[in-house]
Length: 78
Figure 1: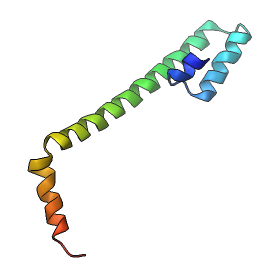
Figure 2: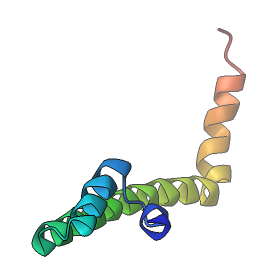
Figure 3: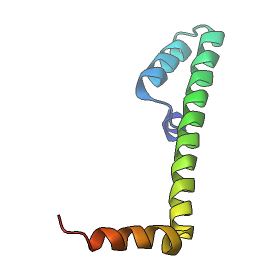
Figure 4: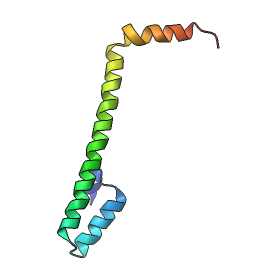
C-alpha cells in the first residue's frame, strides 16, 4: 500500500482497489482503477513540467525581460 501512495494513488481509489484485492474482486475493475490513477498522474506531471518550463524560461531571460519590467514597477508610485 505504501508503494501505491508513493506512486501518487489517491486515498479513495486506493481504498476501492484494496477492498477489491481483499475480496478477490474483479481484476478488470482493479486494472481500471490503476489506469485512471496513471492517467491522473500523467496530467499532474504535464502540469508540473509546464510550470517548470515557465520558471526556467523566466530565469534564462530574466535580465532581458523581467529586470526592465520590475525596474519600471519600482519607479512607479502607488
